[in-house]
Image (cartoon, rainbow, N blue to C red; front, side, top):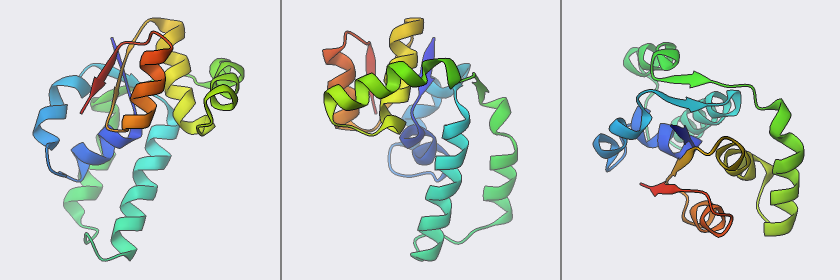
Length: 129
């Protein structure tokens, strides 16, 4: 089973370079509520920076996110995530995906090189996109 970092969803939903390659890792994977917030925030940021235009197609794709990933409860992993964040000097946001992957023996799928390196150091299997 895979847990999907938000960077992968951004790449997929906004059809960034290499988006076709992440599709196979996303289908039937898990994510957390934070994924949705970070994805929407990335869309907002790219829109105000005029890198994309918010379209009905993007909104339609976003409305189908639950068909792409299953959302799991992140609350019970928060303390572990904080420990990982403090020990490795990364955000709690990034460490939350690592904590869940480690606790559940999931593979972490990410486009974030630093997050991937820390996950590997903690014996988490990683797919770097």
